[in-house]
Amino acid sequence: EYAGVTEGKTILQNLHFKTATGRDSRMHHPTPPGGGSFADTWHVYGMRWSPDAVEWYVDGVKTHESKTGVPDKKMVLFLTTEIVGGWCGELADGEWPQRQTIDWVRVWRAS
Image (cartoon, rainbow, N blue to C red):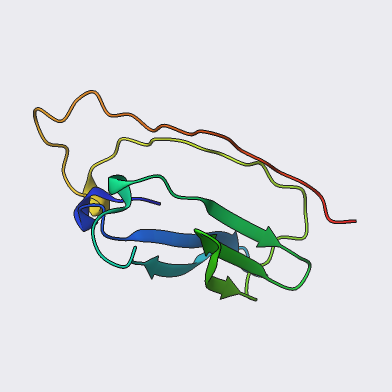
């Protein structure tokens, strides 16, 4: 997640899931780009999902790992630009249209 309130200086690597009792929960980890903004240049984002953990990567560097809430069912991959107010920051006049540019997506299953 790339929230406007961080001015492009942080992405949020989240894992949303339901607990055994059905309660909504999440693992949340902010990741800074090491100076500047994530919007300044292209980045390669990755995620490795195994039965025991979910790992996140930015530009080939592992930035976060969660062993809590690891899905055990098939999931769907969404690449979206969501326009919301609230925790992401209020919508500002004059910043439209917004664009998310994706060069490529690769998904594979480990053998």
